[in-house]
Length: 275
Image 1: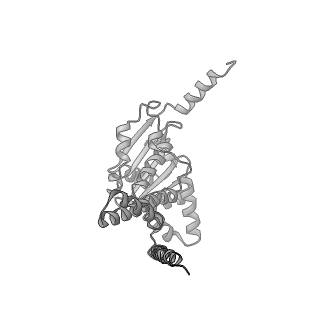
Image 2 (image 1 turned 180 degrees about the horizontal axis):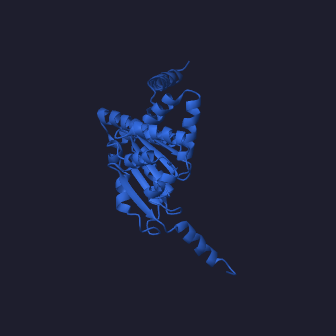
Image 3 (image 1 turned 120 degrees about the vertical axis):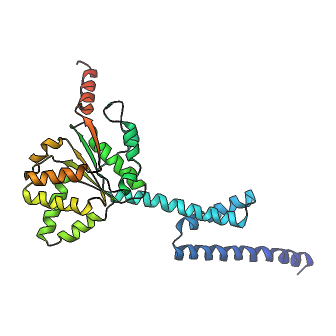
């Protein structure tokens, strides 16, 4: 072996050991992130390390950047999970609501309800108005905003909830079902007072409200004014008690009686050729 060959092999040896050393470190970081359940750090530490080198960041800044990226990703995943668990029937956001089409609804009031202060206080919300005035959009949009703020939200129609409670009672699971709904920060009930409820179903619904009273918020959307709720809750005393629970320290939003869905349909029809 010549002196040149010996010199070349000697020069290459440290580079091989360095690469092996980096592979070992990468493997160690990967395993540690898996064990500590840090998927974002595991996926991003190389990019963050490269950025830290370029910016001549300190070790503390590098560590802070890694941890902040993990926290930000966890917050985003939790936000998506809470919205998914709310079981909204379709995506609706407050920023997509057309306030110009329904001037009866105040954007300032609705934007205030997008913040969770009233939910933390356990206050109720009631959306009243005819069909096509945006009640369900507002109910889902407000619920989505509250879920994205980190609170547990559950959406259902009133009929579906009553049916669930009746089935739970038949299966001797009523207490467990009521307790499950009692843990939700905001319960959104759509189509409230749409259908007449039999006395047993109305009483079961009242139990949900009693469980949540002044502790957990409830939001309802109804196309009937309070004076007509007796058609749904045929027991006058029970109807009065339900109205009291929905309105006490509550927010009442009236969306009016001018259906902008119907107005939009008429406008589109007049624009069609031959009309």
